[in-house]
Amino acid sequence: MPKNNDLMDKIVSLSKRRGFIFQSSEIYGGLSSSYDYGPLGVELKNNIKKAWWKTMVQDRDNIVGLDAAIIMSPKVWEASGHLTAGFADPLRECKKCHHRFRTDNLEGDKCPDCGGELTEERQFNLMMKTNLGVVEDEASVAYLRAETCQGIYCNFKNVLDSMHMKLPFGIAQIGKSFRNEITPGNFTFRTREFEQMEMQYFISPDDSKKYFDEWKNMRMKWYEDLGVSKDGLKFEKHGKDDLAHYAKAAEDVIYKFPFGWSELEGIHDRGDWDLSNHQKHSRQKLEYFDQENNRRFVPHVIETSGGVDRATLMFIADAYTEDEAPDADGKLQTRTVLKFDKRLAPIKVAVLPLSKKEELSKVAREVYDGLKDEFMTWYDETQAIGKRYRRQDEVGTPYCVTVDFESLEDKSVTVRDRDTMKQERIRMDELKDYLIKKLA
Ligand code: GAP
Image 1 (cartoon, helix red, strand yellow):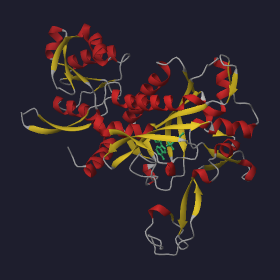
Image 2: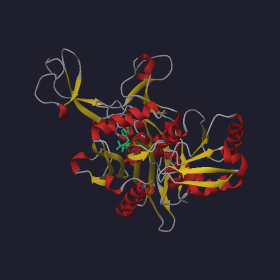
Image 3: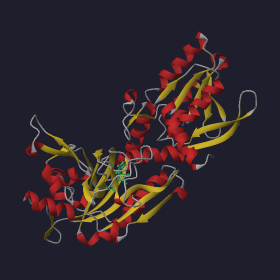
Image 4: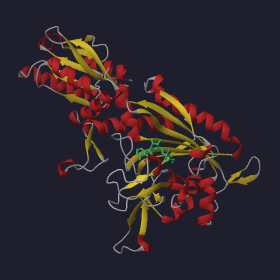
């Protein structure tokens, strides 16, 4: 396997070459730290979100979904503490070139870029500002949300009342968030526009410890069940000094990225910070009535908060494998394989006629048409079959189906497994059921 720096370069290069991730606005020289997901990237990302939604919403009987607006009332961010120093980085600005630096990244008192004099430390808020409507004044200022969960808190009452939920219950949401990050970087790891998968679990105040531990374990299990290497995952606890402004306790699931152990997802005990603050600022009751014990209270919250882009980068890095396999002439060649869990693979099946001859293409097209309503299927008849196998390995396609001249006689095809490279002959009329079982 390549060394860590090389590995990151290889991931970035493969992502572009094979249609996973492109630089945003590339034809204009690119916008730094902004990325677009290509045809295979969007499939992978959708599959990750689907797997999360299945575990967090579909498989549960006490968690429901939500899709709230990105732009909310600015009052939300006053109540949540994001417009105050709670959501800011301490920065110093160069008086000459006006570049800003995080104070914890600075060595010495001079600008690292031009040697100019630096200002005193100032708090720089991370919320992204915009204006609503045609007049750009203080009254029209709004913000792009910095975390999706505030939409959940603001809809707590709506969901409680419309869905008749009983504590404990959760609300889950996937969506974009925005932060004016000072130090974006490491490809898609830290960007200013990103997607989050967040779930807020509303509980009685006495149950915090129990559900914090439960969710920690369930979230770790989710990554492990999707095949992430166990020695690449661990927890990291936040000390008192590095807790976010809303958190009473926090632990991160961290992953051994090629650039070092870094946060994938946070599990937070937010206490009643959010609901109580929204209750105060909105003057609306955000309480729960516990009929059994005849008491009314503001629920506490355990939050699970993961990044879709970080998860996508992690799944690519974890799946990246190089092994050696013989080519058509029997010579050993390096083979790059993305060993994605089958549920995450962007393409599930590739149909490859052995040659472009019309009689083969015709049958192969029929095979392809018979599969594509069931799976994300790809059809490829260009170049030698060995090259086509490698191409599919490189994007993590679990099964390649080859239609050869014998297929015309025996009505069977060859199915090749990505990981073992073993080949099996399967009757065409049994192929779909065979693949359904294999990909289940
Ligand atoms: N609602 C709580 C919250 O937002 P956070 O730890 O600030 O907590 C949660 O963010 C997750 O969102 C992170 O673990 C990470 O996966 C993702 N995330 C946060 N900032 C990000 C950024 N600038 N770029 C990409 N992902 C980010």
